[in-house]
Length: 303
Image (cartoon, rainbow, N blue to C red; front, side, top):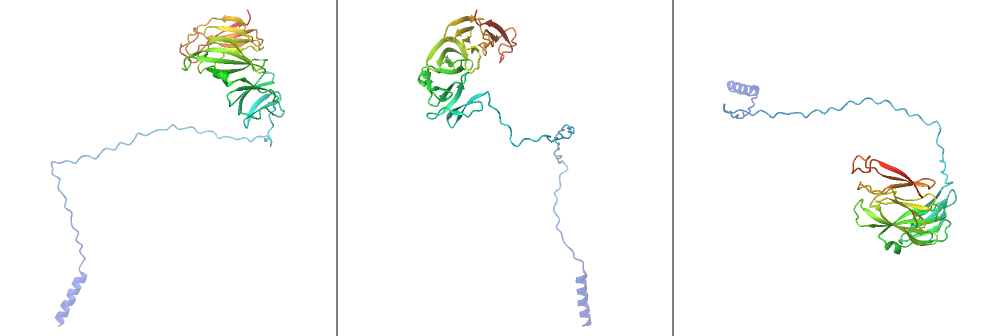
C-alpha cells in the first residue's frame, strides 16, 4: 500500500511540475522559383516645393487721434444761390435756395425728369402718360408742350434742353435706317415754346447723329440767339428763328467710322465757335477709339 501511495504522489508531482507547452501551427511558405524576380516598388516623387517670397516687415502704423472732435451735429449745406427740382411720392417739387420747397404737381400721372430754364421761372417735365409738360416755378400754368401724339408721329425724339435765356426747348427727331452701333442718322430740329406750347421746325440738319453716341455737335450759343449744327459734311449756324446765318463752315469728310461728327464749343461771348474734328495726320490708327487727336478751328459766328 505504501508503494501504491508513493507512486500516486510521484505521478501528481510530475504532472503539476511539468512545463506548459503551447503548440503554434506553422504557416506554409511557398517557395519562389529562382527564375522569377520581384518588381521594384514604385518610385515616389515629391511635389515641387513652392517658394514664396519673403515679405519685408511692415512698419507699425501709428494712429494719431484727432485734436478737434467732430461736432455733435454737422453743419447743413446751404442752398443759397441754387435751384433744384426733385420728385417725392410721384409729385414734382421746386426749391429756390434755402426757401421751402414748392409742390408743383398734385394730381395726374407720376412726374419725373424736371428741367429748369435759365431764369428759374419755367420747369419742363414728363409724366407716365407719355406727354411732356411745362409749368411755372410757382406751380401755375401747367400745360402739355410735347404731346405723345406728336412724338409718335416721329420715330425717335430727344430733348436737348432749354435754349439759354429763353423758354424755348430744343428738340431733335432722329431718323435712323439702321440700329447698328455708331450708324449715322438724319436729324430734324424743332423748337417748342414752353410758354405757349407751340412747336415749329428749325431745320432738317442731315446726318447729325450717331447711334449710341454722346455727341457735342449741336450747341445753342450762350446768348440764346443762334444754334450751331455739325454734320458729316460741315457746320451750319442758324438763328433761333430758323434763318441760316453761316453754311458749311469747314467742309468736313469723316475718315473714322467711329467718329463721324465734329464737336462744337461756343466762345463765352457768342462771337465764334471752336470746331474739333479728328485729325488724320495726328491720329495714330484709323480705327482708334476714341480718336487720339483732334484739330481745332476757330470760326466767327457771323461772317
